[in-house]
Image (cartoon, rainbow, N blue to C red):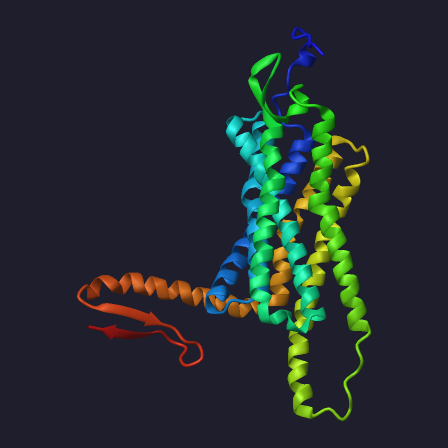
Amino acid sequence: MDLNCSDPRAHPKTSMTFSAYLTSVCYFICFCIAFVGNSTMFLILIRNQRVKVKRVHTLLLHMNIAHLVVTLIYMPKEIIHNITIAWWGGDFLCRSCKFFDNFGNALAANILVCISLDRFYSIFSPLYTLNAKKTVRRMVIIAWIVSIVTSLPSAYFFRTSNHPCAKWYTQCVSGDFVGALSSKVVFGYTIVNLIQVYILPLFFIVICYSLILYKISSKTKPSENCPRLRRSGDALLERARNRTLKMTFVVVACFLLCWTPYATASFIHFTLIIRKLIYAFAVFNSAISPYLYGYFSFDIKKEFILLSNRSTSRLVDAHYQPAFCTEKVSFRYNLKKKKNLYFNYKI
């Protein structure tokens, strides 16, 4: 439809609307919460992986990376775009941002499926632990490949376009908005993306955890004649497994709570501001998740102490190393033996 550029109403708005202000505030709060939580958990997970590789921590690390993509790319992009109103990033950045917008959410959902499958196999297959690390590694690789492949079409569907009445005004829009693509094609991809990010993960999660709950509820009580030492050792293992299971339940519940309104709203017409707020609530999953699995998986106070001690040892290393230019200096820190740093000089 041709626009009458002599009509002032045909020109784009150059000031922030109320919905832009509101969503910017929401995303800024969400970014602050997400940045602190995800960056802290990233350091904690990296430190623990260097000490001992655990498959649960491996899965959480990749989920954390997915949440960092959402935190460091999507959230700042939305805030800046609301402030600038027009798109100033160019066509390449437009396509790249849309790719990462989908990739971060897709990877987080796929890793959540991996966690559900890992919990399922660990309970239903006693021999699973023998090759669990290799299996988890394969699942993570598949999750990354699927996330990349399903997110690549976004880089094709989106592009920059100038306003017909204001050539300086550029926006990052989908191809159907400018007539380059069919609306049915773009809508079809939107549905496929929703299936991949929400419906398929929901299917796997419901199946896995329904069977897990059935297995747990049908467990027989331990015999009274069972040796006390055996029961004590099994109790410790059972407690650790239950704690991990609780963590996954809570993370899954958070995912469903945040993304279900968005999935529902995709098939119902809402005003622009409501749709933006619903999607902001879905993205909030990336902000709250690190706090949930951090609480269940780690002693946060202890982890902060270990991280601060590691930082302190690096500062000491940087300060003293130049004074011993003819010697090799190694600094070691062992919590089990000593609480203070000591130097081991090798001439």
